[in-house]
Image (cartoon, rainbow, N blue to C red; front, side):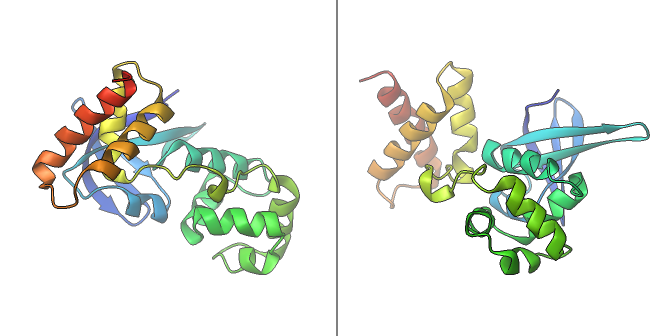
Length: 198
């Protein structure tokens, strides 16, 4: 129903952020690692979402990128793990550590995650081994300060991965000493040039 929300972060709490967009302030439940990846309150960003709709409640869950949301949805397929449990797991272990533990069948590492017992850890390994691609085999997602730029390029019609790649290339060519006020505009212009084949 909702793929993502673009807006201004109005508040960041433990496990929850608030975002303002179009005159509506959204309450979004997020893993701690994802909240840490977002910019500070007052900044604009994009959060990828998933809506849990039940008879007596609706809860909006958010993630820093699409890969994190996909991991969350994979966790929901494991018997005994609901949305709150999946959120707790993603808050208690980094994406890379989770992927490594699943691929290695490391029950001890998974049991170290708060609230995750041996039986559930075993179910996770059986259900998810080989289904969550290793972070080391994928291009790392862009840092949070590129989220708005990538989103703007996507809105202009460019493919997301191409936009991210162009921004990464542009960032590698911009001097570290460039003032922050100038850096975003320069990144954006360079990325468009790369995407247009110039």
